[in-house]
Image (cartoon, rainbow, N blue to C red):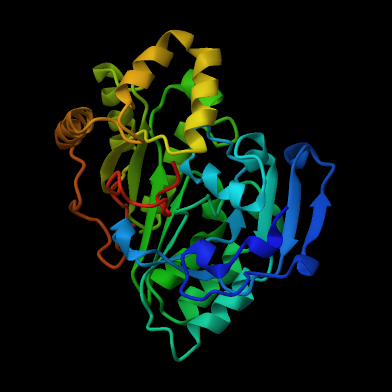
Length: 347
């Protein structure tokens, strides 16, 4: 593994020093059912606040990612490519070789206290999920949230993990002193599709329970309806069922995002597609013939349908009775085709 080649610049920061030294890596496995077959590489990072390159056109400039790799094992996850920086496999290796920045909370607290830090918004869950299964063991997020709260630093979280409810009190405390945004990713409610395409995630209904619980505790939560998977979750009745369930959960907003297939993710997803839905391979090759993104006409059609359904079910950016202190989580739009690989939402 090329630990020595993993630099701060690889994570879109301005510095050009190694993120950590190879001698600082501790590799562990745990013989418990939930972690069987997973290897954890514990490192002490040298930087934790990462700058997103301006060319990405993301609506946020800074991110914090306490993990690399993700046990959610979503077959379409764009972040798979990042594992190749470590000479790790972007397929099964991404799902089972997890890098853990064990000093993330203390490092973040130190960086937030620096005179060079201006208190800008920090987005989390934009590369891999900070509430993936590993968080149950390593418990990095409570320290991260406490540091952000203590410095009144605005932040947002995007997650598929129900574990975020463990930190509900910290989220409420932070929302008292700064802008906090939370979004949950639910692309579809089809359980058969979920079991094959997102095998390591909580079920869609459990994620919507998170939205419901957060709303009950005064924390408005939006839903990133992502990805909408062409020919598998995009039929009108499927879109309606998903938006209806999102509305019933009390979500403050719904934002659709069509599947995109970047290098690393594309190969893994197409291999999955050929095993489970071989009749769709040709259609995908034609739909994504021009690059990582579906054609604009298709994206516009899905966006229009979802927005119309959202209006029908009464979902919008603001609704009577919503808490005003808590901001909606920042959800980026896809960058242009010519942009270099950047950190996006967890898809």
